[in-house]
Length: 531
Image (cartoon, rainbow, N blue to C red; front, side, top):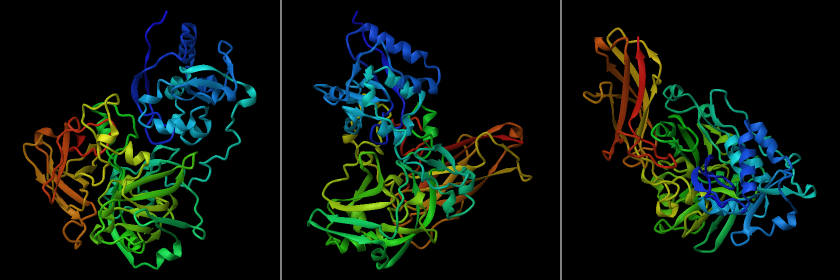
């Protein structure tokens, strides 16, 4: 009985080595044995809790054969089949790998144990993912060959302490944002309240031994500079907003599910960054201002189990433009960078998506090519709303650089009961920002479905920076009139921003939905109850 295959959905956010990005695909049974396939299905269904499915991976299946590590290591490619081990289980993932955009990273574990990878990428430790893995089980690993992670160094044991105001989306790695209401309390976001976006464990760096490797592939020149060397360059300060590419993803998820961190509107912050201008440092590497063809690659000191660092790149033209204000920052709001924000050095690329602002900077390469990093090639790209995981081609889309114009209502919050003021108004506050150095020129707010619009007051904006160098957000306030007949009812408040290029926000998230849930900049909407 060779019945056709089950459809399975894997749920994990795609970030790097071994990550299973959410998608649908067809699974071929690991062998022609129907009994084995049915048995796997039974084992998966019987696991009613995360703890039970974890135990399944540590349980010897007497209905399945035993394999040695010598046998498994031979199955490290498509022709021989792709096998991995986890706990005492042996799994044939041959049919899954071609469907995974990060298949090159999955292949790092081919013919070996995935335990060390998942010790770091703990987002895999969910009932859904572990149940999916168990459905691929083909055997048991001989007891002598079982890899245990119990005695491995815990890569999360030295994570820094965080302010409790931050609301975690994930703990390992730590990703969190503050309540939206605190963003509009000050033009500069306090360091402790600034959102945190980490992809890997936070590295521990000794500033006394810190070294920044630099290479110019075009000339073959390379050198290493230490932290005191960086301090010798002229000190440059830039006030800039940094926004995660997935900011407001939770609103896009209301249109259609997206498997990724459900960021609200607070994966953004504004700070004063101080450091050496990148163009000054690159000139000392033999790069001339007119030499703008190519890219600058950045690598962090945060690494995965294969010692592969987080990486990204920006165009060389942006890096070498003195008006681009790209800096190697070592201070944030007048204080040394803290560990979550890149101590001792990170790159700040004003106007550009947060993922290019690499933290814990360890290496800079001037190259003719973009970074080959997963995060540059297979993530942080946007596609048509009709593109799905079966049709997506990450190579067909450019990496996100400048971010689009956006605004967000920070107070009141959706679902909040709001007191109508004596003069018949409701006060609304929020932020607006546009990438690429564009200035916010207007924020429009409506509470009657767009029949009438109130122009918000721009309370705080960056001044005196000149055209094309408006890197900071604008904080705004609007007083919205409430007709007497609506008091005691619900009210939807909507905002849209307009920048100096007269770009404005799209009306609907449905029109800009994309499978990675990035560059979400539709109208900001909150529904409140009036009192």
